[in-house]
Amino acid sequence: MNKIRIVHYINQFFAGIGGEEKADVRAESREGVVGPGAALNAQFKGEAEIVATIICGDSYFNENVEEAKTEILEMIKKYNPDLFIAGPAFNAGRYGVACGTICKEVKDTLNIPVVTAMYIENPGADMYKKELYIVETGNSAAGMKTAAPALAKFALKLAKGEEIGAPSVEGYIPRGIRKNIFREERGSKRAVDMLINKLKGEEFVTEYAMPYFDNVAPNSAIKDISKAKVALVTSGGIVPKGNPDHIESSSASKYGKYDIAGYNDLTVETHETAHGGYDPVYANDDSDRVLPVDVLRDLEKEGVIGELHRYFYTTTGNGTSVGNSKGFAAKFAKELVTDGVDAVILTST
Image (cartoon, rainbow, N blue to C red):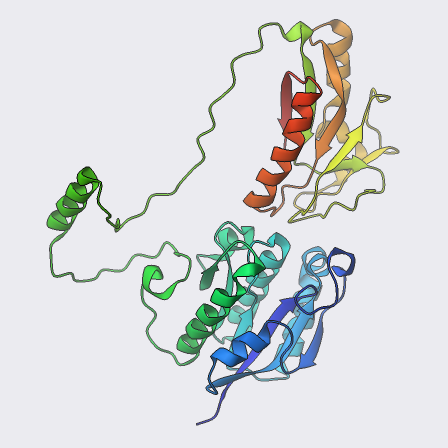
């Protein structure tokens, strides 16, 4: 029996090329195994082998999607694989989006099985879980020891054309697909048994998990807005001209803090957007459309608000992971409180 031929996709970090400073490297192919492919190959137990590894920088892929997809597809075709694997991406947002995007392209264009792996809160998972099998991993690369065996096991099953069971059995992220199955006990009895276990404080597993949403309690209203210090925060990517901190256009790994004490208006000469998820023309022409410094200066002069905080905080919300977003907010919220800010206006796109 011939070995299953696999092409593996990884980013510049896992290829050992470098971190963020090398995220703009173009796609390249290498014969055989690179980086985490070694852990996957070991788990295949001789039934499959990675014949080639495709490497691409996260920034390059996400900022040149169509070009990158075309380049990578041509590289993959040369190896005539039976299966395509991307990742694991864990909670790296741009990497996860790239893995999902190229997997879908390979599936649709080359018509071969594909699989990727990432953390459930990775934006790539949310974007592609309905169309792809995505093996669930932990939050960081520290979980590679468990991620690699799970991904390899699932990949072999997929390549062999074996029946894929439920997400809870196989370890992939639920896709929202329902199937009718037969159970020994009818639904009413199973439901009552679960309810009894719940009332007793005993363990039970629901058959239809409900989505979980954060419940954020609102603060009390500002008593006197005319004396309040108001700050601006945006996920619309407004930055000083030239994007000095190189905030990514999608799946941001950082945020920026910028001084607007000397500005009554944001102009085309001074500010622009780094965001890659909407048409930037109007935001670049007048960044006040996303970050309303001009209006708040008017309100400040009129005494409607006490003052506009001298710093604004910005990032790009396009594909940025929930984990990163929470981390950004936790850091700059402390600064806002320390600086005596009473209210924050959060703008998007």
